[in-house]
Length: 433
Image (cartoon, rainbow, N blue to C red):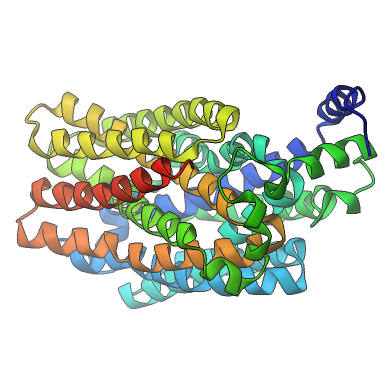
């Protein structure tokens, strides 16, 4: 065991090697590609070249099914991918999921009916379901708890970078008759770049990679949840190494409910943002692209700033209260604002709040589940939240149809779900998380 005088040298040497951050960068690429193929569909909602052949024009409820079918399958599969990953290996599961991901994107581009497009999205949801539990398990294995918010911010920011870069480079394709080309390019990058990088850079555990030395391994091991006295209940955290143990943890259920509200916020705003800008404020296609990029860039910066603060004191829920509150307030203002510019700015701020809340939700999971149980523990927490939250896009579509296209009721509904997160987050904050 290292003496106290040796610990600073060990920590310095480990940070100097920083191989673990290369793993985080590979996860960033994976999440950037995955988020673009998710939200690229939301841009297609305003593309008549896509909507008309499938019979989706003036049918917001069925249009919402393109995202809801994906999210339902996504949520259900998250739990099972977590179980499979803990048994067959994390890297192996990632590669299998990516093969299915590429095939489903190809299927989507070939769909000639709304039903075929919806089914392709549903199966894509199954293929991509590994993302959350496997990424969280890799992070838990490769990073000490006091670095995990920043590590997660790296790859979760793929949620922001994917749309920003994707819409910048491929936005013109998505809004025109050549929209399929954008998805062909995503398939090519996935197969030619992402999969080889995972095979070379990523391992299930840092001890399995020869580029990781003993000092870095010691630094990672020293940051296990069980060793963090600043986190409530850390001395009993070992019980969450099993599925039954994490299911019996009341704080884990509070985290799940807080994250459930977050999924409503995130998918409700991100899916319908382009439609809100187009129908409520009559922005041009170019303006929609610019305002959408603004929203995702704002989220990127906010997430990095919050991750730094969250790692400093490990009080994740306190930061969550700010992000959920910001999103709720932004939605309420956007619902009643008559100014196009004000509406675009505040809905962008609301989306940034939902993005930061997504990061905080992941941080909180790492505060209640140990690394050994992360694949299964995060699997059920995120699985339940995403299954229920999967109905958000189609619910918003139905409310829009009933309200003749008005976004007042949809945004107030989303704000109410944000209040659920605020209540759960307040309880967790009072308990010291």
